Image (cartoon, rainbow, N blue to C red):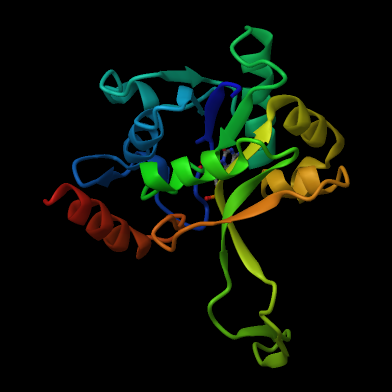
Length: 233
Ligand code: C5P
């Protein structure tokens, strides 16, 4: 099987979170939030390299000790959008020969800090021979409503066939590079949508509700409880 490289965009400022310190650097059970994310990815035996993309003006990364996380490399090439950060990171890895066209790239949000080794291994095992690649996702469990401008229900949408996209999203480096080059960066909120725009159909691999993205301050307590339960703290 080809090599697997994890790419973690962490150049956002978490506007919805509303903290002066970007959420990926907030303390969570004694370490910066994204240290949990990076350590879990590094603990997956099939992953050879974990590359984290931070903004060129990042003032926080160097304030922490990352030496305990094997396979980690930092790329200070973050862009104005998540898609741009991923594209810049991918280009940097290809330019210095650390990523070949046929390698699998697993793009994972820094803020999905409760991802588990087992979940990533399930994704890699399911997609190992897939011609396109795919992503972790969850079938929508609730009844779905479309709102009108007044905050009232305009329609009830059938949830049949609807999934919530998670990460990692796993594609061949060359496929993802082509997809991101062709896509308009503002419209791309995940890698799969860029690959879909090439006319390809990424595979959905069942994820886990614990692999949620820390988005609002209230999410921290849930993430802390999940991580503490795993380590028996
Ligand atoms: O803001 P949101 O949580 O949706 O961002 C998803 C991921 O993309 C986060 O890990 C965030 O740090 C990253 N990101 C980035 N560059 C940006 C914006 C977001 O790397 N310009």
